[in-house]
Amino acid sequence: MSALESLIARLEALLERAERLLPPPPAPPDWQALAYRWQGGRLLPVRQVHLIDLDDLQGIEAQKAAIVRNTRQFVEGRPANNVLLTGARGTGKSSLVKGVLAKFAKRGLRLIEVDRDDLIDLPAIIDLVADRPERFIVFCDDLSFEASEPGYKALKSALDGSIAGAPENLLIYATSNRRHLMPEMMSENLEATRGPEGEIHPGETTEEKISLSERFGLWLSFYPFSQDEYLAICAHWLETMLGKSALARRPGWRQEALQWALQRGSRSGRVAWQFARDYAGRFK
Image (tube, rainbow, N blue to C red):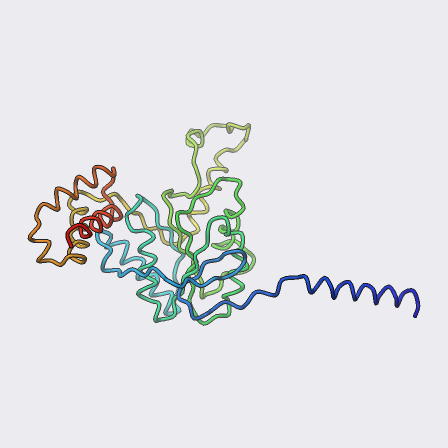
């Protein structure tokens, strides 16, 4: 055996030993699941999916109608938009996304929850689901960015701007308390001729920040509830948990509900649901 052949044989043996040390390839996703989380570069099924009946979401009828219409168009293979849901906390933004999953799951809709830090993997997710028959919503909850975060660029490209077009079976739904998803500085509103760090055209930086939210085709805004709206939501949940007749025998619940909201500093759907659970748990 020549020196070269001996070297090749040794390299092959070394590679064989190294391959035995490598982890096995990941198993393919369980495509029977309704919802998934993207973790560690893998699509993991959610075993207990939190499905919400859209009829339980009160006080947001206009937003509900808009997202249902958009999602129906999507599952029927018609043109539809990526959706940005922004506004007051606890008003039903995330619940609305879970609600459309419950409504359209039997028609092939699936949900993939992706954390902000994992948005850099969006191209891999898109490639993974592009040939599937299901319709996928990539769900980014409570989304906001700092200027230096890599997920910002990845999301921007996935929405509209990459050389690779988005597959027709995937949309992105995101919730945020910020309309423009990134912090805005007062100095950016002064139209100064020089930015705070010596930038000659600070207005262009502002446009860059705004451009991400503008790539969502459908914007849905959520606002704090009035006292009457808050009490109506409390009544809905209490009737669901206790029954209408049982609730009628306890008229004092309204005052307790208002005190609960005062203590929490918010009249939101989340606070109403939390009050109803506490109240029903005490008297059921």
